[in-house]
Length: 151
Image (cartoon, rainbow, N blue to C red; front, side):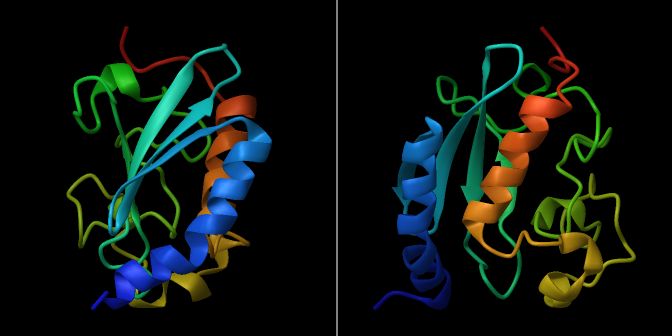
C-alpha cells in the first residue's frame, strides 16, 4: 500500500506533467516519491533538479540541483549563481523547499521558519503545489539567472 507521500505525489504529478509538456520542460518520475525536472534557462542551457517528496505534503519537498549524467546532487557546476531566491548557501530559499530549513539541512538559511506549517508561511505565496513550485523555479531561471556557480 502506498504511503501518504506517494499518494500526495500521485495526486499532483499529472498536473505537473501537463505543465511540463506545455512549457517544453523535461520531466521523469524516478521513484515512488521522487522525480527529475529539467528547466531551460535564459542563457539557453538547462538546469536540472531532483525533487524528493518522501515527506510531502506534511513537509515540503527537497529540491536539489542535479546532474542527470553523474547523478550527483548540489554540485556548483549544476547550480545557478546566487540571485533572487537562489541563495548563496546553495539552496532554493523558499518555505516550499525543505532544504531551506536549518533544522533539516545545514545549508538552510532559515531557523526562524516552522517546517510543519510551511504552507501557512506568507513567503510561500502561491507555491503550494508541485506545479506551482516548478513554475516559480522556471520563472527565476528565465528572469534572474546570473550564470552558473562554477564552470
